[in-house]
Image 1: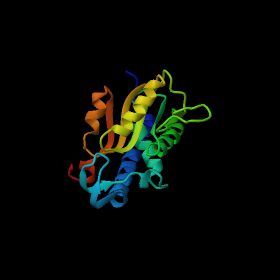
Image 2: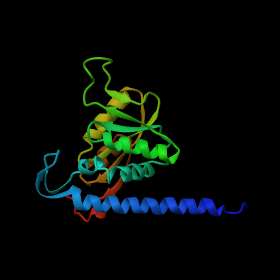
Image 3: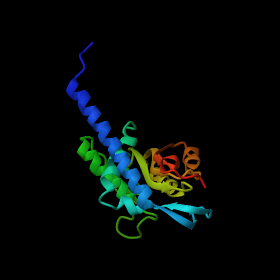
Image 4: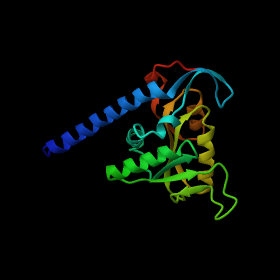
Length: 201
């Protein structure tokens, strides 16, 4: 049996510790700056007493690098070549994951799914990475019903992509997981309401 490599073990420990620090710092930012209390109407039409607005943080210089590393770790075992989702919410997340993947030495490409195909130029609905025949992950900041992610999935399937999973930063526990899994896709979330100290609604 080969001897353990102390340098390799230390490097693994360092990366785990760094990821824990990323998670804690992002969690603190979400709690402090992305959870709003009041009376809100969700995209499903349901009423809510709080709203998690992750776009405030996916476009924030303090949070974006950690988001990239956390989401990259979340999908690390899936053997995919590209990430992205429905514009606008998924765009900065895909960009963060792309940069984190390059830094990790295992680069992934990114793509953007338009809500509708362009009516000019090449008439494309998916921009960026060529997804035909490729294993990809659909990203979301949060998801209420899963419909935005499923719209991206539908467009990607038309292009011949193999969608492996839908990965979100925050799972609001409002039915999105069931909708995604009903399509035969894996659901992954970096954080859920328990992490945020919030009750389902």
